[in-house]
Image: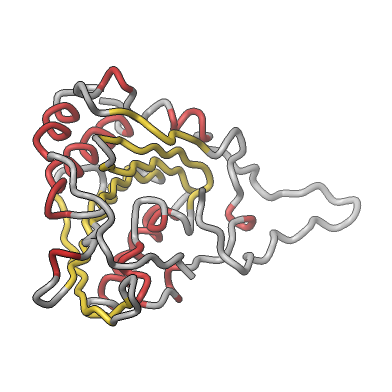
Length: 248
C-alpha cells in the first residue's frame, strides 16, 4: 500500500513566479511493495537462456537530466538528489504493483515518487527547495510498454478515488476529491492529477498535485504539496524535463 500522510499542511507554498521563470528559461527511495512479482523462469539445466537482457538508461544517466543549481534562480537550491544506481531491473524482477490496490485514503500522500514507483526499472530524483518549500522531480525509465501502464494506473486511481475521506493529523475525517486532466503537446502523453480537500477549512490541508509526462518508455514526474501555490512552477518543471527526455 502507498504510504499515508496526514492532510495537514506543513509549510507555506513557494512563489510560483520565481520557479516558473527560472525553469522555463532553461533549454537544457523507491516505494517498496510488500509482495514481489514471480521471478522469470530459470532456464532448464544445460540449456542457454533465451530471455532478453534488460537494458535501458541507468540511474546516473537519468540524474544527468535533472536541473542543477546553475539552471535555477537565486535562492532556489537543489537538495536530496539521488539515483537508483547502475542496475536496470528486468520486468520479472520488479515488485508487484501497489497502486491498483491502494486505498483512497492514500490520496493525500501522492507525489512524483509514489506515482512512478510500480514500473520503474531505474530512476533519479531530486528536490527543488525555496526557503523550505519544495518541488519533487523524478525521471524514471521502464521496461518496454511499462511507462504507458504506469500512467494507466494513475488514471484508474483518479477515477476510483474521485471522492474520498481521509484522516487528518488529529484523526478527524476530512473529505476530498481527485481531478485528472491532460496536456497536449508535451511528450507522448501527459496527465495531471490533483487532490483537493473539501469543506470550510480546506485551505488548512495539503492539496498535492503531480504532473506525469511519458516519452516512450520513460516518465518525467513533478509534484508539489499544494497546487494553490506552485502550480505554474510544477508545469514549467515538467516541460523542462520532457524537453530533456526528447533531447531538446
